[in-house]
Length: 95
Image 1 (cartoon, rainbow, N blue to C red):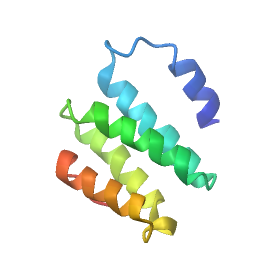
Image 2: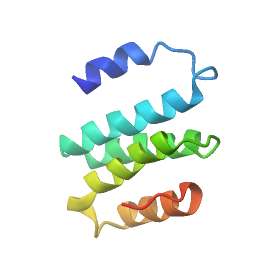
Image 3: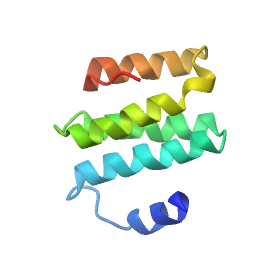
């Protein structure tokens, strides 16, 4: 369901709805993690952080924190540790 929603939302212009796009990427990334697709999930998670680093939103940070919690099965992976560290540094978000 999240992936179908993502296709519709992807048609939105990115420059106008920066926070919404960043949150959408975190949500869809979480859906990929729940489907056990770490690579695609991390790709979207990193794009989300790239965008959300430019906005101040506690709601957006909540979505990134949820994404981080979904990374739990892969906590020992170097890419996952790096991502979680990045979210702490750039967004002040922990798992």
